[in-house]
Image 1: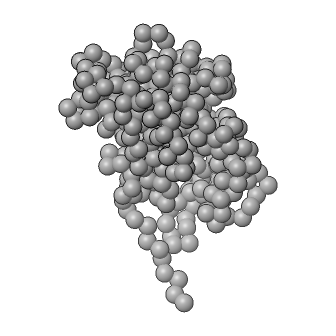
Image 2: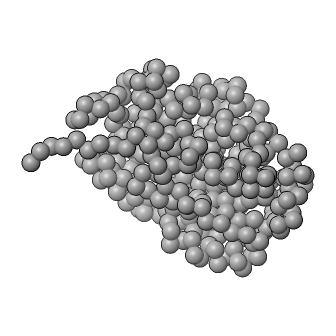
Image 3: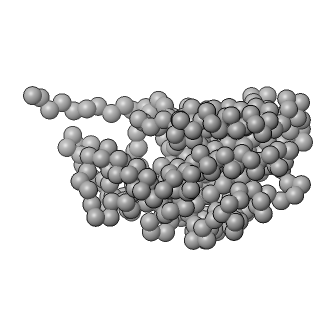
Length: 321
């Protein structure tokens, strides 16, 4: 048997065409931008430069390097055990939302601080706002139910002039609400983004993480449930993503004329049908399912609006011009 080297593709073709992470990571350049990454560089059995993706500190250093190298961030860190987000996937979401808004702007992506995006559950990493501001100059409203996550995001914002004064951060004190006490009366939001807790229980979240470890072909460790990070509110909620997004749909009715597009990531394809039926019941004017893919993983964005075709045309004049 010959031990043939498995060649990795140079282009990640499933990522959005504007995604800066379609090509393989230039770890030498990234480490030059963020020297801490040097501590985690390894050489694979095939002689390629890589990092140990089993090591959460290595993944966090890679994320910091990506944000500094591509998005002009000078400081980025998150508290121990909090979710370490995959930057390429987060960037994909932002680019697809940009495409959605472009449809009501004669095919041109609306840019600048007049465009306001509401990030539900911003977490401790502030990644969606960082990408959205760097790529399109948007403004962001961010919420979370976790006070530690809120303080972490505030620190990232305060330490980076490129995003400072472009992000409003609010603690959602009622974990059963999404928009209430965050979206103010008579305010307008161009798009709402959400990465909901996918799992319905701590055990389901743990089992999913074990599958990740198995896919990485690594031996189990005593702290395996923490290797990829994520506190309870980030990983699971009662009813999982299906229940979370269903509640989001029902609450969105009240905000149908102050928010243009409501969107959420949907990890489990089996949840899409029931959620689309729910959107029919609340009389959403338009519903989209936008496919996404990163590597072997497939996901999708569920998007809906209560705006009529004429109101969609008017939105540009009233909010972007």
